[in-house]
Amino acid sequence: MKLDVDPATGSASYSVPLKRRRQAGQAISFSQQRSLRSSARLQKRVATAKREDTRSSGSQASEYYGILRVGTPPQEFEVVFDTGSGNLIIPSTACGSDACRMHRRFNSTASRTAVDVAFAENPDDQVKPNGDRDVVTITFGTGEISGIFMKDHICLGDICTHGNFISVTEETEQPFSLVPFDGIFGLGLPQMSQAPHFNVLDCMIRDKVLKKNLFSVFLAADDRDESEISFGEFKSERMADQLFWVPVSNPGYWQVEMEDVAVGDKLQGLCNGKCQAAVDTGTSLLAGPSDVVRTLTKRLGVKEDCSNFDSLPDLGFVMAGHTLKLTAEDYVDRDGHTCTLSLMTMDVPPPKGPLFIFGDPLLRKYYTVYDRENLQVGFAMAAQPRRGDGKA
Image 1: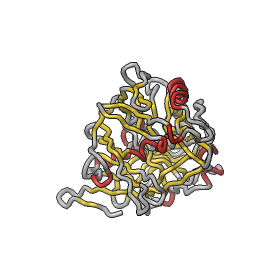
Image 2 (image 1 turned 120 degrees about the horizontal axis):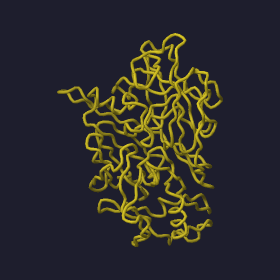
Image 3 (image 1 turned 30 degrees about the horizontal axis):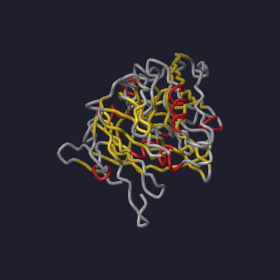
Image 4 (image 1 turned 90 degrees about the horizontal axis):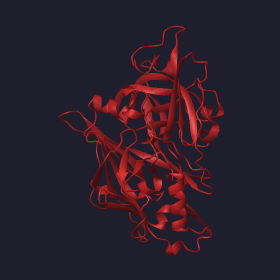
């Protein structure tokens, strides 16, 4: 994609094309659940954390991913751009598991600018010979990784910064052996990062390489059309109506306050005045607290044989005086004569939860803008390309 540079400041915007891969089976979620750190020798394994069961039987997982370059000379990786986690995570050549070996791995010895970092709070301090270093384990919605800390150059196209990232030394077979991408580019707010220098978006802002301190996401509804994530700008041509803004209510996730859920035109009274929702580009379905999802599943009444598909009501999420409406085409995964509700249970523990997760079904319907400077999320109906057959 073309780099758009401001000649006065040298800052730029850049759009990364995103590939989409679908697969049947367990839904994918890289929503960050927990992070554990241990100051220890590399060989010592950190205790694992219990994961929530986020299975959704028969669901169609979907992942969007694009290209990132790390190191000097640059090593290329395909990464998920994930607003539900806070760190850049890339497999390293030190990881010998089957899941790691199936993907491109970062070779620190091949980069002349790579630095082995001992502790997250001291991002420039190298590991001393035979010295201790931090080992971190991060648990996601559907998987877990362990790794060490590195610092190097990080580039999206010609937009470059330098920052810290997690170099993976162990990862679970599920889901990492199944995914086509190599790593995760965490775009959550710095409260989700190991330390400030681990938040790559903030590193870009620090280095003043972006035209605007924001990014935007367009997910195409049709696989024949190109999805993209744009850094430093949002695009009016990607919007079918006016953008409206919702303030971030609890920084960490791009988390916003939601007033209620609607089925058809009827408010369901499920929020007791307010709910919380995280806008999460790393989750392939919609998700919510178990009790609320059970209620909505019953009230929507999606039949497995699709016999009532054409009469299913809209599902709406009410916020800031607007309703984000999804039709059955958006919130039901239809595979031939089998229909599955694209809504899974995910019980995010306090203080981050309980909350809804707005994943791919909503993000294909709505163009989203993530404003780091003003701490707000923008929503507009996505302008999906229209084809000669009259279908979007």
